[in-house]
Length: 541
Image (cartoon, rainbow, N blue to C red; front, side, top):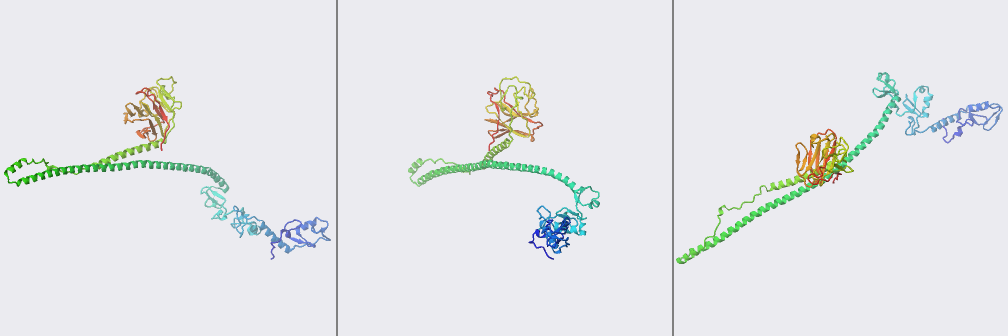
């Protein structure tokens, strides 16, 4: 069979009348070619029979026949043009499963053959009787996955009981009693859920990013804490090393001094013994010389002049005892332990104060709670007793008998604040329950809802029943107060000395707390006119 020349153009196989590729081409006596339908219709409308191309007039209507060779070429050319005009498959489109080499875009998928076809390879399904019965659908990829493995039917339904896709036959067998819906309906339901997930997932991502930041921030804090601990530990270990070295030097010195003392004692005894030996040797010589004299007169006269024997010690009881070192090392170690304990206590207090200072809160004094004799600064940070009772409106929050004042803020959780007590001869400060009695006399005890540190000429006292008297602290200038609400803890610190003063543990907190101050009378214990000042925390590295 002849084949179409790929170099031929569409003009070689186009009808001059319809301008399309020949369909059943015929040739006129003048040699021009037309579609049989086109030339027949053209002549049906003409009075004279002529050629539409060269206008040659025929006496009678020509009897034309199909040009078989040209018809075959035109059919081949039409096929080539059709294949050429079909689009190639794009990445997101379904390819033809039959095409070899370059795949064309599928236009239909057959649910019987389970194959997708381009326009060219679909032609048998449009022509062959048996294939025409096959069910064609819009192109689908992975056709085998869209078919029921049991019934070889398209999965068009969704079983809501088992949450699986099923075919129509499945609803009559295994899923007969299960509610099923079309895939499109379930698709909308699931898509709505997906939309909700699309909203929730970014939120979850944001939350986790925030958590990552929190963890990283905590890690940074941990690193700073670790570096601080290393620095603080280095200080105490350095102090320990210095103490050990000093202890060693002192111990060595003590042992050497004892040894030197023993050596001196031995040397003195030896000198004394040597002197006695020398004296006795001289006397022995005199005695020996005299003993050889035969002259009676000379002997008696010389014996008379013989010196008295030198005094001597009874050496039978004299001994040099080795120095005793018993207890020397123990005393040195006891001194070392004491020094180490002092350094450790200082380190613990300093580290503890640094930790609680992180919970600093900004509090201001509440003028509605202040006793009428108290004078508050405009910023609510200072208070002193003015000596004159002011006329103020009644207020259920006001302390009426004692010169007390509380803060505006009620607090819980963990919090810390500092109060300057410099130049004061009497004061009281701490925390109080929100509902404490403010009318009349108040006993400052935890039982009555107040946890306070009190100072007067007799020293420091934690007000309890009974009161806890604390060691005197010289030069106390600023007091730090820390509360851990959940742990039931109230702690007081000497901020300047960075020393822990006292902690009340096992406290029962059932409502919010207010920082609480009492500056004392202005002339209490001498000049007490200085203010109590709520100070900002100055954390040291």
